[in-house]
Length: 505
Image: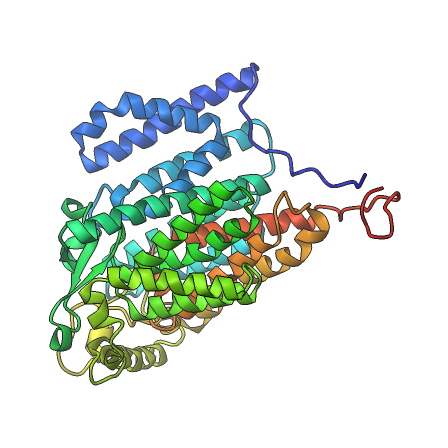
């Protein structure tokens, strides 16, 4: 019988009946109570204050089980704006994601200190911390202080979430469960978005960020009014259709991963249905780049072995597309499926992007060392000839980052992004020799690589890493955490009693 390494021991279990359990309960009560009370007072919600005892009890439970708190954090990633307790225009937004994430991080630190467990940092953490430090320097010279404060708050949130993931997400089965919950919530949100698209009404992009429009999932886009008047686009529970589209695309490789490695017919049917719901939502976003990228991601997944190309599979895919096309609303046909709109003459967004890119390159050249400060959206309009909004981004992640933090910050940030991809790539090569396939197959890391590649490609036409893209941070954190575990895991030793075919005798 072959010897296989056991799954890395669960780092966080329910405390025993020792005095440390009492410490955990008392400290957890104080921490969760303080966090939730401050959150309630900040938003001034009477309902939240009335429900504080119930929420406080849930907070104590989360403090006792860091793994449960982590899984809950992963499961609420897709709800984004639905969980926000403040509007998008506030200096620092308060959301359910941040409250639960803070509880999860506090729970981890509490158990780590009481049980004297090692706290992971690593080169990736310090690299992104360096970027955060460079972003903070922008506060001293930014011409848009509020925007810079908001952006620095978002960067700090990413850093803390990444730290949480690399510390708790070190067990393969826990990592798979976290991703599965993320996908499940994505499907639930997708069904809700489909229903509100067909039976609800849309709101303007400006109103979408208000708390009163929390349950609105369709935005009315007027950016191409010259050719299309106004266009309905699914934004889901996010602040924009482009953000929602990228959130959906990140999940596609993992749907295919679970579909490939699930043997039960019932589960395969549910996963396939979830994949179709997600793809239909991508179509409803009415975002040309997103739909093209989604198709490219599916093809890349096939090329990387997440599914097999076959005649039957191609026919099934074509039938699924044919079944979905009649469901596509008229707005999608006019904006996305009309080939004449893929031209500068017919597409105002393409013309504007070219103007913004030229202006952004000039800004980056003028501020090549120190940048203009992260979140500064008031500089680009100064470089645009003619009418321009008071605030806007450059709609290109690479130019935007160069503008904000200069050449040094640009190198630091994209070194971090490259390091995450390298970790997933290396983990995919290490996993087969160190873990049995049923524990965590190397395809998990292949799916992570495809998702990361999709993100950097999407960044060519939008400032993608400026999105609250917690799905990407979950993937990156899990890839880094599991890669570090794999480095410390000895290779599987084959049995000396194996026969010539390599099977145990």
